[in-house]
Length: 72
Picture (cartoon, rainbow, N blue to C red):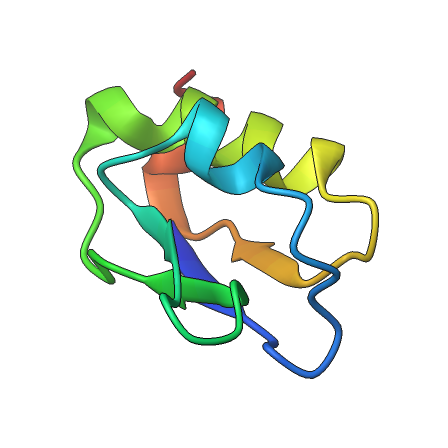
């Protein structure tokens, strides 16, 4: 699984940080999403998927790849 963020789409709702705080953060100056951890552990997949689903602006993109698609 790979995750990316689009700061231009971010509306600073914080749903990403609430659901996957090890992976996402918000910039101190503009409160826009930042990616803290681009390499994910399998135990984080479900939280990252949920954060992407709950993002009201669609600023988080999750790309599934390989056998990890079935996990989470």
